[in-house]
Length: 582
Image (cartoon, rainbow, N blue to C red; front, side):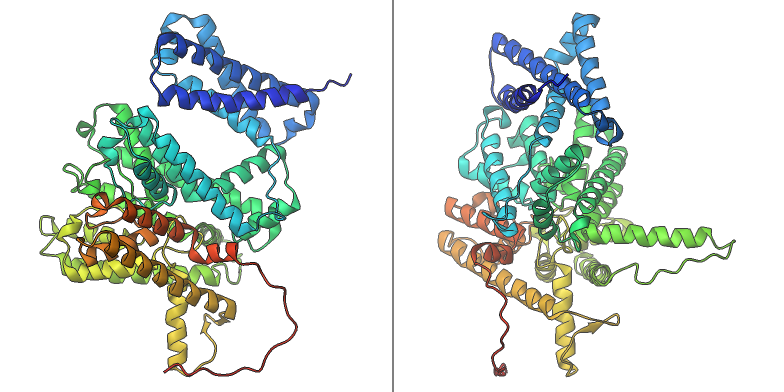
């Protein structure tokens, strides 16, 4: 007997979409009891339809039991049935505690239903209409605009927020920058802060990463066109590696953020928080913000807040978290393979069966790791020496060392501050400029021109000084296309930052030029550090900073690739001529 469940699947899908809108309406607006009861009832309709659709899928296709998606479905079904059982049979106490007082348990079931139903839809990244660069940019624009609207919901803030300020905050969160025009701690409610956290997570990894992997996970495959598009967006070397790359990204993210949240939780003084839930939220918020190199904090003075500025364990945990996020997923995966190889050889010493594998650490990893280590070391020494009797004066020797390490690492797009930024010595500010501009490593959650770009520029200068025509490092030659991209990235970054500084000096002539330049470098490199002028900028200047943050996140080169049409490969070459440079 063939039963057509198509209508049930469509109904469950649209019900789950409406369930998300109901969730936004529920938490974003105030309403009377009868409306709340209707919303609660609708939640149960949504999860009931999703439950029926899940059963139907397995009834229709028993092969689903052999796939990994079955584990997710079994857990989701068990959780949903538990909610129904507790609500219908346990009694009023459960209803009061979980349905009315804390509806998050039911909302979680609605969100799981939404993920399941949406992931069953066909994801079509059609290259006929948009190239990968355009798809990448449009995904960020969409999330920024949606985030702006969510932040304008009545219950997201205590006193309301203008569209420009909501747009600024949303852009800063999605572009994992951390610049703020209103105090995140006191201006936004817990719901508003949760929206910001969601935007940071989505922005740090990219909405296409989540959407593509979930679609692949639930459907068990993807079109070649989608894989080709995603391979360009994720910089996968092989089309066949796309979804394994996405899996690594999600697994590494969840793992690092989970352990970071746990370590942060135990590093905190419980007396500084209202209750256990507040402490948990603080830990999760800062773990995600750190790994995504966002720099957002639920503290009004960031980590310089009283009660936190001398918490050196917290600072070290955050440093480890945002350095891992800033290294880039390919490098972290490469490091895991390298450590695994070393461990295997260490364990096999007794048997004498040593395994040899050439080039486990590829050239990308070597260049980025060495550059990161060099920049952090130089930054640490300079920060320690320049600020020893200035912003670090109140700390012990150990505290000075920890804060110097924090001060050297955080400008490279993390954006947290454990000292008073306005009290920094002028030479330290200039060092911070350089570190912000360079930023994190490629394919990471951080911004800037990237460590590999800076390394290629330095290596090229050294090669020219030695009279060499090629850049050679680690017995490898750097491809010309990499050199061209590096110098295009450097030139475009300085053009965007320079234009931003010029426009803000026109719109805000009363602001100090150093402060404006610092703001623009911070915005472009998605750092989030500021010398205190962000909130006082005019509307026009805020729009300029929004544009700089967006360009810095998606890169000016990607925008130009999205705008200009690619020319076909030509089989001819004109005679070459040297241009006088100096």
